[in-house]
Image (tube, rainbow, N blue to C red; front, side, top):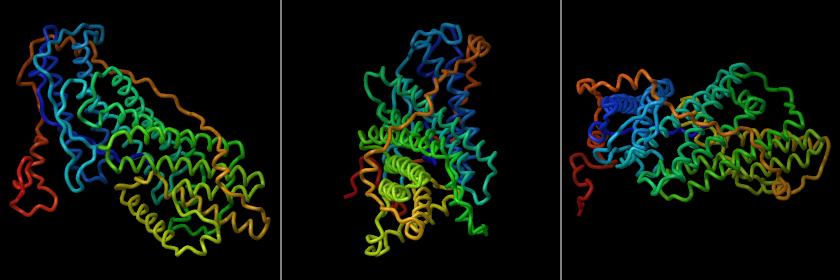
Length: 472
């Protein structure tokens, strides 16, 4: 369940004010036009209702893919490298200044995230590529949402959705990794936390964690069983016990542990900054817990298949501790007031409603879904152990300390820098036509701030809250 990234918006600029080319004089104009399209598409996407934004992601992706080659052409002109076999002579008239709205930084609840003023083409390139990576993650999110609908998908549809989501995750990971490698050449960090080296490194680790975790989703039958049990239209109250081969259960556990390690790495890198969005920090922590809990559950299945039901129960109790739920033995549950269990059930029902609406679902990284699976298995196995074969349930702490190492499944894809084709470069040798320049039709980001008063402000008192003014 990928994080629901918010796509940033940007202000209007004209590259002709900052760059001049003797070999390709139309390049700044063409880049300005492509950027104007991206700017309009991002602003219109922002105004679409959240439940309908998934269908517009392909339009955003297309506009970004059209604009990015122009950015790399400008970058090649400044760095003195060739583009599509041609040398571009580009002169910097003055330092580029752009504004992007930070969507990963912390902000006051109820208010728009702040706009960050940035300088240099490098910042523009990083924000644009990061936006494309967010689009890939959101497309993976849309694919995985089909697995949790009321109408259960067929095995073929399920495999297709998971395969597409995995591809999108790896595409996003390749972009974040490329940006991290570029950041290694920076002399100073940018002013926006969204494109800082630590944030981009954390996002690279996060996307790899998500891509690794869903590798077990296609062959994991338990989420489907819980979903059918939760389905109000389902009349099959009894089902055949789910069987997982012993070897694959151990393999799945190691894959989940690798995902947990990637998430822990992302959490550590995000923890270096105090300006990161709390929702993203909580999601990364939940993803780490979910992956660790899944690993414990698969190791429990491995033990139970081998006839060690008591050890399997201990693994499940350890999984609940890793997830952060009330995970206690039977005598502790009797002493419990039941409030924690009631709170957990309420949170699960709230997550179900989010999935039905298709808005803000999955922000727990699948933690409550995994908790349901563990509760189902724990109830079943404890009943079996109490009535059929009584085995001693060992403590879970030594088992958690003896967990195997993680196993990697994916390797980072190489990001291929998109380049303009030769025909486009030839056409840009002609003198520019100012009438062909398009900066966008949508209002500027500053105008959006003017239209939105501060949360809780009394009508007519917006000027009292302006930057630099004193309320008293």
